[in-house]
Length: 227
Image 1: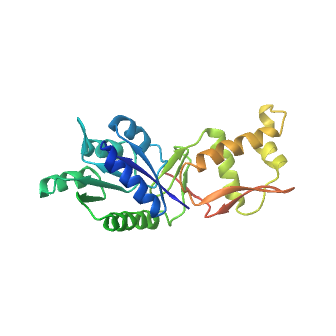
Image 2 (image 1 turned 180 degrees about the vertical axis):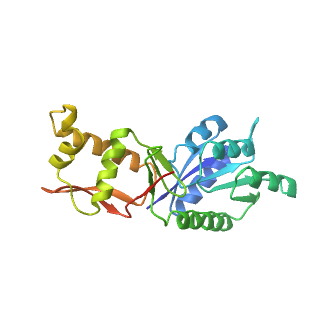
Image 3 (image 1 turned 135 degrees about the horizontal axis):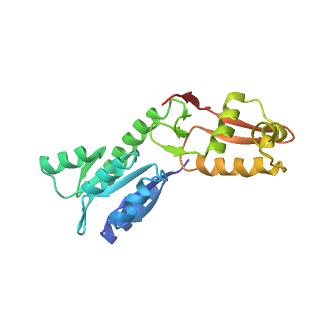
């Protein structure tokens, strides 16, 4: 699976070099030069990692990382800077960066540092995702998504069923029939809703359609958690 990265850098030449160089190493890199827009993208769980420059025009990359962490972003973040003194490196790491790379840097070193952080994040995700009833959240070591009440009920039912496919009629009778719904297509609609949310991060499993049998989870099924 291709890793998606967000590069937050206001120098177009450095941005272009990073995008092209990372592509040669198998990364799909996107760029953003404004801290406010970058913050929104970092907290949506769309990326496997980020590279953030300390100086973003009048904005601070350190403040951006701090705000991203406060907003729930848990992806690996590397900071880039020409500021090499201990105080600046410490400020970046204390803000929540996983590593701090000094400019000018050797590209192979940057990629190696990035991969170290990716491997650490993958190790944290090796445990199954957690399905929390109290908050209706699906969580991993690095990502989470909030489900609606009916999305949660559907995923919980499929989780309890394991790899045993649940027919559309069974799902409909269990979750919708008592409320007066009159069309089993509502099951497909909510399966679609869940699949879109599952696609926002690597939760370790997917919902499979088994022809003429129904739906089931494939992969590392989530576990139920109280909080």
